[in-house]
Image 1 (cartoon, helix red, strand yellow):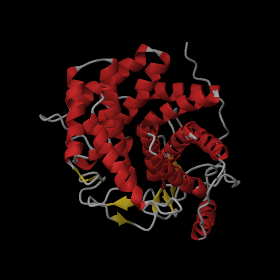
Image 2 (spheres, one colour):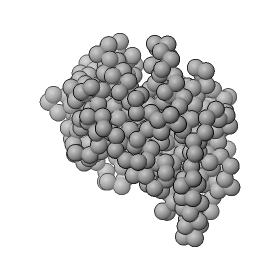
Image 3 (cartoon, helix red, strand yellow):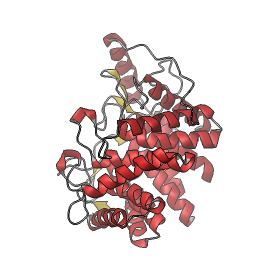
Length: 386
């Protein structure tokens, strides 16, 4: 019998306008004088990040994980999309640190995801209505698959299959996701959804799941030139964040490994290699790159740094090429330098900002939960491969 009990941390008091102004002033001053450091203690930064992610879970009014903390308005409601893959991170925390509390949290989150799933199998974002969204459904599918793998509970598999069936249903005649997407346009970063649909196919085989998964991966490859992607941003015509680019690369890489398809691995490798020359000596990577590889923005998208670090470490794990390891270590050290693990403000202690400096374009003035999630994933892998 799966229990849902967990060690609840006390909720922080809702911030006043004065609190938020003080927090912004403190962060802004620190970011103005920010200097990246090297050789930081990974374990200390990892522990602080894990505690903050638990805190984000506890701040939500339901069993999901809060979107994160904003200096413009405090803690935000739960976010279904990222709660899906955060469930997987809590499974890893439980596994690597023997943390029973993390295990109970991921079971709680996974059961909540089943509860909020639409009758048609999709996942919606209440901010935009009840209509299912391809990307959100794919990220929750990731959590449901992992929950089933870890527990063998049939409810999780049933929910995962329903999500997979919906993803197949809403694909167009070519198998691509051209509707039920953010702003109603196709996005290359949905390769990450294709990866999860193919993973479901390996557990519960279905030819349509493989067909649709491969169709979106193939389209993603067709949009790549010299390692960079067209149609990879949230909005048409904009330069994608490194966050978007890393989503696209990771989907191709993991699907390539899963299906033993070199075409996808080669495309992912090209994308990962294209980014390496843009890493500054201190680990800074520009927050956006256009489809020709031109960097944009004088800020760093910290989430993207973490995600690229994971990709480079996975390539290092497979190839032994030390340049990947050094790229990952540098990008993750930069993020560690930006993390405040000593502040008395529990709302942000251990969290990862959207941007460095905090007023950068990506999730401006906020600490989104997925930045800390990918940071934890990256540090676990870095420790494993040291």
